[in-house]
Length: 369
Image (cartoon, rainbow, N blue to C red; front, side, top):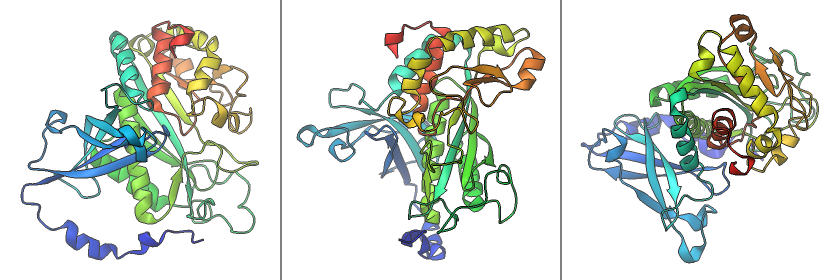
């Protein structure tokens, strides 16, 4: 099987001619939603008669839920409720990307739609001004399912020279990373950084700081843009938490959290109180930190490769082998934020941020998660 898709070899210069044609005031709007797997993203595009000025100008739409594992064929209509609008970095202004919630025929959220409950929790905690930053790790694969640019027989050199590296012998796929970064900036996604990760062909980008529900909205759209950029290059971005068995790092989605009190002088005491609450709810959080109730994270949270064991809750200052890390600078300053290192790369950020706010700020019962 080829390592790069055939469609990526189409003439991109020829494509440019068509993208430059005038639209005569019309606007293409691409609707994006999460499918029934809770991980996959779907999209389709329609024409509007004018460029929308706000999310209120985007009409609801529908789709066949039986083709996305979200309904039965006998009652397949699902509804797309637009919730956040971005500029389209692929076909450019005035065209838009629009993130949508999915509703069933009776207007209740689809099973994979965790945004509705997350939004309610964020509204309940609004006075705390909760900021999030999420660090999305991912791995580039060829079409053959093997890490991009790895030797076809054997393995690259052991981990060590690849993290934040430079050089053709250490870094694979930087073109994709830089294009994704620029596309996110153009779209209006709050991307704030990127770096090569510990395993070769593995990368990370960071989104934030975002307040409340905006965190998950921006991360989902950043993921969509990543997959779309990779499509142009003919490779695959996987969010599998442990794409390669053996002495290789897994992929997480480390989540940084702070409240107004944590960010102010003396905020370390509030960070420590939140960590204490998280310590007694470890099992509940593990169940919502990957789409399969912890089964994916079992392969990653082993106590090795900069992780704590899935069966043990640990916290510490500057400790990347802990469940919760307090950055060294925060320990020195006595205020700031903390990092939950447990969420998997393929987590649903709505579920993760909701669980953290429920536990740390709303004292939710275990059954509420």
